[in-house]
Image (cartoon, rainbow, N blue to C red; front, top):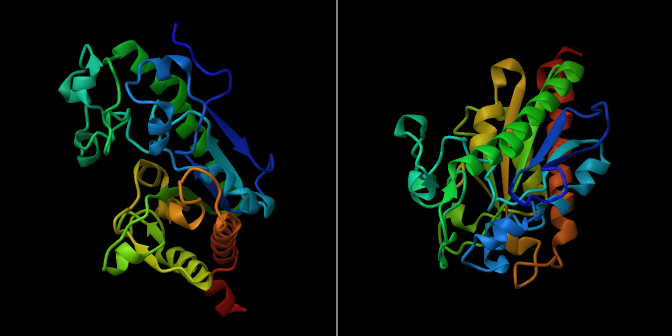
Length: 290
């Protein structure tokens, strides 16, 4: 039996009955590393932590205080990536390897960042042995599927109450240097190239971020992952937007601990959530009819 943390794989945080149409998800900030997971790694914990969206779970408190609900992962991305399709598996790291017909090969999988990450940039291969098919199945059935089922249920509850639900999927990105507008942006909004959320909500989020003085890019280089793809269904009244924030904006120079901008980014996330809620509850056509 694998040695798993005592904590549940994720937490639902916020009011028991939704009081805002906005739901936050934080799939990459979990820090509950099981001893078995650490024992299977050829790199130290400090290197595994590079996979995290460091401390993003602690950035959402202001949005929660304003009434948003959230689903926050506790298990680390190194164990299983909740922003990947469960078929995005590198068959070479599983024993015995799954049938190729059951897999979904992607650029992320080929780059070592599939359902179970296999490589870290600058550190090479993560694991000292292949994962068993039984262990992979356990992680999917105990962590991945329950997270997405719970997130789907929370969005359904929210839509039933407000007639609409907006998912803000919260992430952070490594600092980037470059000359293009996208490379200079501290905030990246991903809407799956216009498929996961109606454009007026992206515009509202963009305006909120710019009021904080940040440059904003859309879909470049992050257009949204599995969370937005799976849960964004605008025609059904469920919208999903991925938010990426440059880690240097809220962490210290080591990119490990809170920095001087931590509270500012907490305020940014809260402002984006509030802007999305305000647009959902007061759509332009409703105002025009008054």
